Length: 363
Image (cartoon, rainbow, N blue to C red):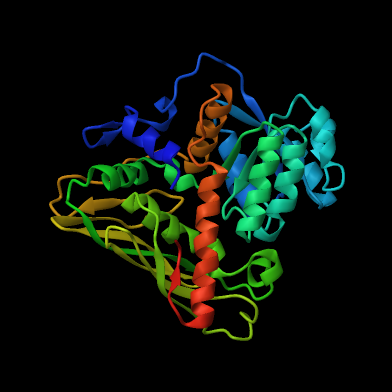
């Protein structure tokens, strides 16, 4: 887990007693500038979540789009008043380099395309936001990080949960350990996907439950413990729809061992609804259920001393405003590329463990 994020959580005034301040007050800025954001890929997440969220942000705004679907262009231009010169396709997006209206390029494409287009984005000299998971392999992650460093631009990965106040409480408790040392973690994330011919079911596109939903429980085990796992103890892939999931996993279970001795048992699936993070410690427990829902995060503790029900109006807006302020104020982003790469290293080990039916060391 990135030390910058932990240092931020530990040292900031974000946490006051058991209450968290609204996300708008996470950072202070004297600048009134709104950064122009260009969305690359106009699928569900951009259409239904990011574009509406950008109408709620204080420090950034929707300024441009990149799409390979010409039929979508007039719809987006009418809805969001995007001018012609801020509309691009995948062949000419390099011209964004000359567009002062755009400060950030947000990659919202299938995982298998992240590396190619995040690098193209970095080469325009614009800051890069990349949806999770960061990429298919650690090699691809390294190439994205290098491109951003070479072009002196910031890179942030779209882990919206780390910007969410109840999750930030869990992160802080991983440091302060109010219930003693963590013994076990149960983390699960999944939903039933009825589609039978989607990119998430194709290996070359970065499909599979572990990549898509699996990074939620995986990332949660890391920020909840404030540790990096040392071993994938075991992993297993299963499917109830073998004619659909011919290339990638429908359901994956995996267990991780941490340096402190904590054990995490995790599950992710495209075949069932799963949404919980339960942490058992020496002196009690605490949980979030749901722990990654768009509509709000809820949880409690074994002694009922804290209700984890801090609410923010829009998680994506909070994430993008925080990332915009890190650019405006030239501060470290909350979730840098190195953080996303750490998850992908573990994902690769999980697949190796499932394939070989053996434990895989991470050190």
